Length: 253
Image (cartoon, rainbow, N blue to C red; front, side, top):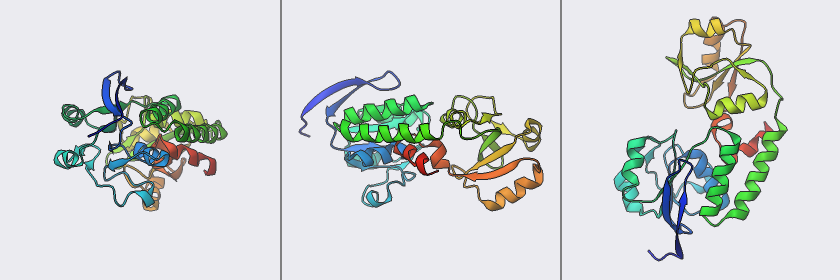
């Protein structure tokens, strides 16, 4: 493949990545980053089955499996000159296998600052800094507009049977705190909780995410039988956990 030049940079995991600049065939392994890449005009030639936004640009982009189950032969067919992933959302074995054949740039995101760093870096990588800068500015304004607008002690549930919640050292926890909530789950990452443990934590509100488990109104009806004193609320999981250009949507939340 003919390229303008080759660049070496460090990704957010302090790994050196050598890639053709600007990349013309990008495979994205993370939904929120796929949306951002397409929003800034990057040439995305492969995506996961969970990459569902922006809908109008996705139908002709081949699916390369899931975020934790890559179809390596499909990726080879696409011959990407850069693959973009994330430490938490992708699986170590798959990334290690891919980086033996292709340049792989990885993000590592826990805070808004990390998210803006990712977007800035991808804008530079793709030679689309102007578009990226405009989106970052909109994301900053949107998230700042909702700072401290919520209150109360909460539990944010992401899974059913068993209950699993967002704990410390997660992007969701950072966002909850930014909104003004106190996250009662103090364990790291995504611990399992029993119904009794949730009762003992005595939350003011329990947030039921639309993803990865698709909580619906019937689940809330069941939950209200367990936790009569807590307000149970369905929330948009994409809004709370996607750390790309979707952050702009907090303006309309």
